[in-house]
Length: 325
Length: 243
Image (cartoon, rainbow over all chains, first blue to last red; front, side):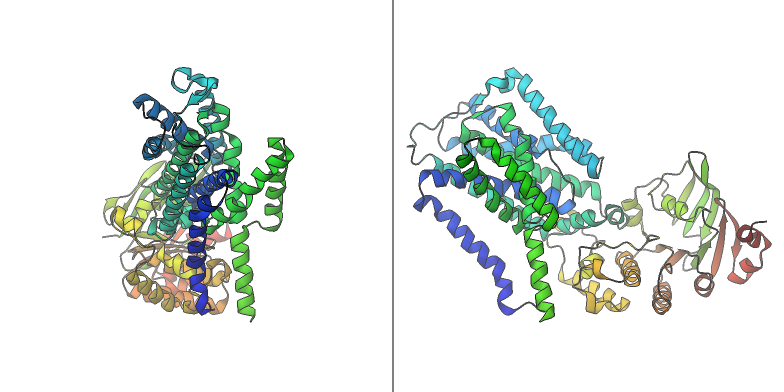
């Protein structure tokens, strides 16, 4: 059962190649490809962040789009009120969007984490819709359905404007993956995985399950909030129905499930596979919502054929072959 | 002085009184058996002591300090470990990871540092060797046989060095060969200073292992003493045979 000599370098090697390729994309690709890159990296970050809670602890949140929205509105309000001009300035405020989202995730988690399993799913959905209603009706704060505008960068040419956002999303994806890796390999992570497998037993062994779940929930929300902030700045105008969008929340979950929840590479792979496909399909189908049919199909296929996701399934096959050999 | 003292503990579920003014004491260093017919409140009593259920009345004291109503993780940190009626392991964690879950670390830095330190891994391997599960260390615990899970569950509980361990049917569903191995492990751990309170239906197992046996019927203790005394007690025969 000893892995082959080269096998232990496979993961780090693939990660290095992928990271270098991701860094090089804006240097060689055209604007529309970079645009696809921005959204793909956004979902790499979102699916990875979601996985810190949903994958490690098994608590499936379908309301993470709420944190996405909180981050976007926070960044928009912050830069507008301080009069930060378009350019690199708003990026510096992204951590503030993360902190505010984290602070708001505490009361949300306080309520949602009183429940488990299906009830938790429902509570997170309810939270998201409540937030959408708040965003629509608190017109003084969010501009309601008129939307909230962000400053636009004046001196970035149309050819260049996507590039800073690409690197911002790449940086956040990297932060997310690093956080996910760290947690997975920490004592905290071992406790989270124990909670996923048998929460009452973890509790009976002295694991402070509530504090552990809360930590994962807040870290996950903060990452999603920061990405939401960059998204808002990128699209320049945020509206309640698009920035607190159930489909954003569902997409990150689907990507994590496709790649393999509870793994580090799974959500990354899921996002890399699904998001470009979805954008491509939306482009060809003309009607942007036709991709939902594809999503439904992928979801069904994952449940039927790869209930544990691509990465765990492949790992299992490899191991089966190795032990057979 | 008793290690664990339960006084007048009661718990009702709707109209059913599962534990009815139960009092008992577990002496330090003992292996105490807790027997009784089905539905006599044994598992409910365990749940009350370990914080999974809140009693309606009564008190639980451990090492002379009240622990009534503390949540399960805090009860564990006070020094009480427990196993469950159906062996419970973390199926997707490896066998080694399983035993390392209860090992505590101090402070936030401890939580954010590596899941396993070299010292913890060494202790984990020592425990697996003690259990005879070394060859399975890197396997997911979900692949173990039922008896192996029972062993792993016991070993995991022991990793945080509890002073009292409550075992809920350690012999249930285990083949006779492994049964002797489980009994031997319990004796070793007891000799090293751990006190045990054991719920078990297998009378041979209880009478062979326990120095003291308590009998529970309809939520209260009706007898207690050495295995021989309990066997001769008419109240016990009544409870089991139904007078």
